[in-house]
Image (cartoon, rainbow, N blue to C red; front, side):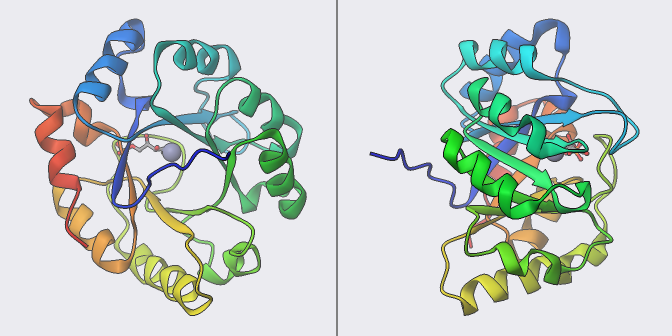
Length: 223
Ligand code: DX5
Ligand code: ZN
């Protein structure tokens, strides 16, 4: 039977802001803080101007935790790699529509490999771009900063887009999740939750916090 991931009103912690030398310890901290998921940012230096982690690191993270692994691919040609990321331990794989791969084929490849599939869009891409895929994905990732780096400020103009994506999902009667990523803290969490987001990614805010559990709690705004 397919395992159900409870993603309603959940927090996915981005390890991009973690101390990479002590990734195991940081993962324990995330587990103890009560977050539902671990967000794993993959950047190839081509789709975005940064290079982060890849398959061997994901395999190591998989061995270290039972947390759901939410893998965000910021790479060109995601279709070439999605199966390997699922094999390495991803529970959810998101890829960018701007990356130019055959989107329907990429979604199918992720699902056939056994993971949940999500489409991601950058701040400049309109909500309508994801509409053709809503029936075949588990989640839409609306980027609330330009992908590439942690620690940036939330882009307010993305709020209307979150609302538009949520409205379309409701109109179609789907159970698709809306994830937001970038600049999420205790203040912006309320804005995005009110707009219809239900899976909140957060990195720098949580790793800077003195008490991560308390800060994770602050992100879980009542919907
Ligand atoms: C940015 C990444 C984010 C990043 C978020 O391209 O996709 O996941 O880690 O970091 P914060 O929460 O610091 O904006
Ligand atoms: Zn991300």
